[in-house]
Amino acid sequence: MENFSLLPSLRVLVLSCNSIRKIEGLEDNLLLERLELGYNQIAKIENMETLENLKVFEINNNYVQSMNDLRHLVVHNTRLEELAVRNNPFTSNKNYKAKVLNFLPKLKRLDNKPVLAEDLAVNREEEKITKEVMLANAKFSSNSMQADTQLPPSKEELIEELTLAHMKLTVIELSALRSLKKLNISNNK
Image (cartoon, rainbow, N blue to C red; front, side, top):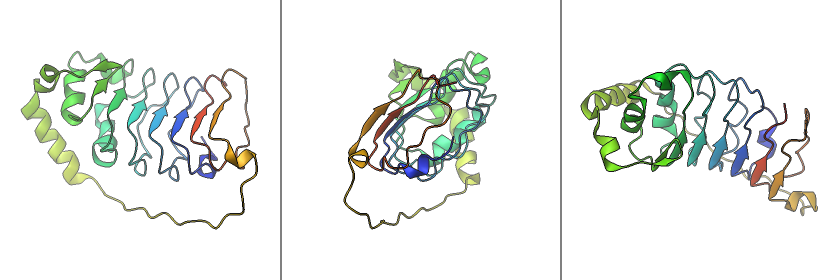
């Protein structure tokens, strides 16, 4: 995952089914609200500290081993409302949904299903302690954004939404698309 820093206006990024192994290169996408990484080869949730506006995160059908990887979401992605984690190794635990909801009690949807009040009650005290320990050990970072002086936009720079799915692309040059808000490049193995 690279060159997304050239797309600072990006709000939606769909990278499903691309054999991605690591979450990286999104540090400058501060406006990102939706990130879809389902059906890849990701083993760890990491490098998401700057995605403070993230509301929807899909990482289902990957190789995430530990629920402890959710600590990044607890600390840095406090606006998260929807999370899809099903079909990762850690979800083989029958109580994983209750534990996820205790880590992230503000979720409105988990694994594409609405969160109900009774879902939040299971294992509350045990998970509360775990969450407090995670928060105490977390490192917070502050990020500042600098405004760039820009020339009047070309036609390419005015594009806000682009879909390049199922095209077997291996290299995509997007540097001129500075206003891009939604990008779908899924299924480009």
